[in-house]
Amino acid sequence: MTSIIGIDHIYITVSDLARSMAFYDVVFQQVLGFRRNEFALGGEPHVQYYNQHFGYVLRPARVAQAHEPYAPGLHHLCLRVASVDDVRAVAAALNAAGIAATPAALHGDYAPDYWATFFTDPDGVRLEVTNYRQERRERMERWDAPGG
Image (tube, rainbow, N blue to C red; front, side, top):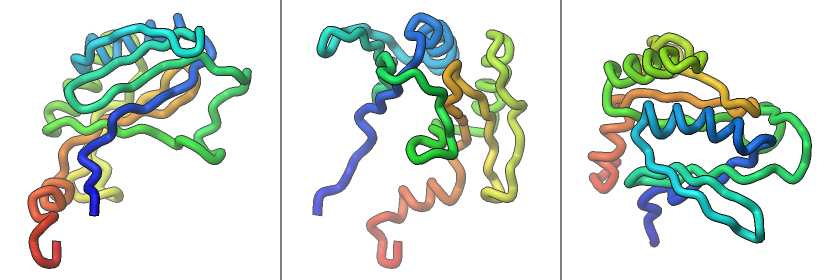
């Protein structure tokens, strides 16, 4: 059986590329340390934010319609950081940069050690940053163990 070793890239369609770039430049470059490149596919401009693990690509939408997180499709994207302190730092940095992120908070109804901040991009795509929780660490460490 072939194992998936990660997410390579995610494409998000946006209604206004310049507006979305201004938002994601803050989120991905300034706060999260991603790099950015620009390219064209089929004559359409694309902007990719990337780190060592995956790329997040913006492309122009072809249909003028608001994103609805409860319609079929993407509900939200959750990014993981190493610690609760990192979640707090991301929330503070986003707010300091003018992005309305919720305060980092414990969400014990999700998991006993689930800390997160939530925010929304200009088109209504919901984003989250959470800590690397114990259950996820154990899943990673014990994947190949009997009963893992």
